[in-house]
Image (cartoon, rainbow, N blue to C red; front, side, top):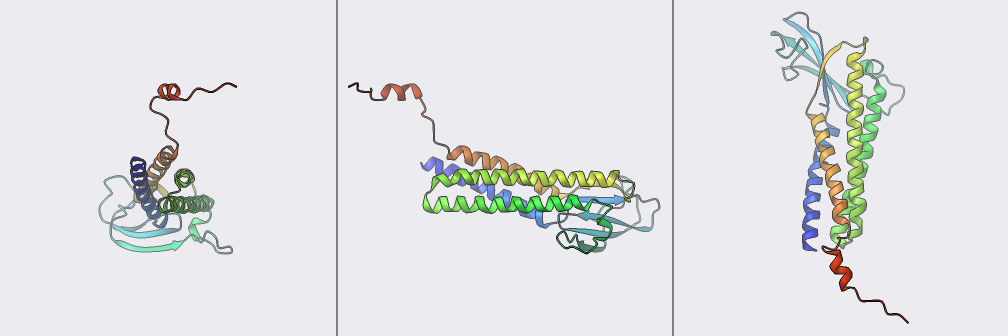
Length: 227
């Protein structure tokens, strides 16, 4: 019993790390960095980075060419930054350049799925904490399922954002020619791995243990009496 409790606590600790990385990915806006082509030096260009909720445009003064390509950047260079929220759930307002040219529906879908993932994480955490406090081991099964579903939801959000970026780059209507996925995207991928695998582990731990030697168990069983 103590061995099982230790395994559950280790799995839950890893899940807490996954929850932390998940929240970091959801609330930050460095999922992807977009860059237009820079034809001349000593000019100002605008690079962009965005997440599930807002877009940030950064004006960067280019003095030297980017060693990684012909784009505007790197994004770490100093410059004036202007951020605006996508207004996902507000009707009657334009999201400026991100309404049509960047397929706003992709970001709406990714944000909605991420909210569902957060809901699964909250339910899983409640079930796990109650099982610790009340010694209700049967709650570990739904907790493991909730964490597994949370991991699946966040990887779906990752794929939706990836498709959004790909469609923006391939579109002739946008100015972006280069992109890369940043640290918020990496946090989302790490959250998927931690939550999904730990959720599966929690499910396996919560299952009743099989006898180490089933044959001996059968031999030790009392014979049935016949009337």
